[in-house]
Amino acid sequence: MPSLAEYRKKIKGVTSTRQITKAMKMVAGARFGRASRSMNDARYYQAELEKVSSAYLSLLGARKGGGLFSLFRMPGGAAPVPASKVGIMVVAADKGLCGDFNNAILRAGDNFIAKNAKTTGVLMAVGRKSVEHYRKSAIPVKTEYAQFFNRFDFGMADTIGQEAINLYLDNGLDELVVVHSHFKSMIKQELTVERLLPIVPVTPADTMYRCTITEPVEEQEILQTLLPMYLKARIYGILRDSYTAELASRMRAMDNATRNAGTLIETITLEMNKVRQALITREIAEIIATNEVVK
Image (cartoon, rainbow, N blue to C red; front, side, top):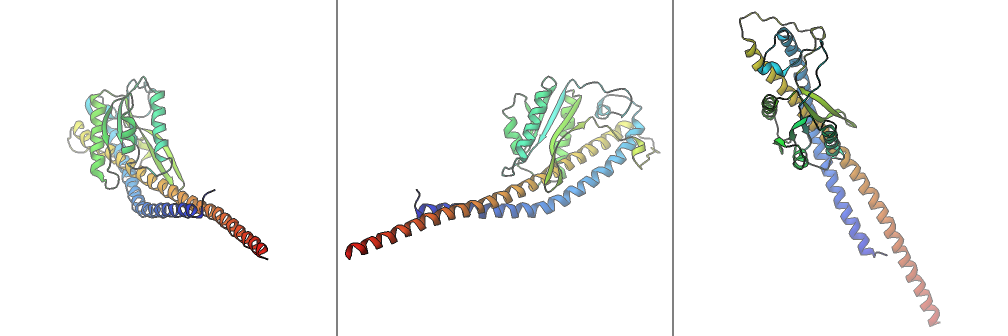
């Protein structure tokens, strides 16, 4: 049976851990407020840009050609041909201690690769946990981005978006998908596997925007500006979404850890009190026995 000193040492260690987890929850909470505001702004910007982009792409939809035209596909018409070569981007966190957040994303990425083993050939790892995991993968990691979530801005989405376009065109991909966590509420984050490229614009009936090109302008010039802008805005929204979901998961994980530490302290304290009571009872019995011997 442990001694009282050992019990006190355990209580001290668990108390220190509880203080750390409580502090981490508070830090994540402070960052969550800023992250959620940035996420909402990014979602609004992306939604409005999608409407404008869809209207312009609808004007160009009847045209066909190579180059940037391969980055979008008009909705409707014949059923799309199954993709013969697919790229995947997996967005995880830079840090751990956020519950099952990273493991769930990496499992989803692994499952997608396993189900599409014959077609998946290009991989982009975003976030240190994703980079570390997929360095051991059979699929070569073409690009790695890590240690930026605490301070990233639209410039990072610009870099990743341009790299995604380059990989899509240079490797002859038919589709580029992204695996990430979508923030829905503080207690719910949804794993999402969605297509990044090709872009399928919404139909004109779904949007209030109606665009008309009134000046002589090259279609390629419009695409060179519009498509990368929309894709990068979408990636920026995904990164903001993932970071907010990460902070929410960390807050829940640290709150649970703090509560569990408190429960463990109570359990250890109860066991220590039982040991101390047993020692006191034994000492009293020894005193009584000694007193009887003296008599």
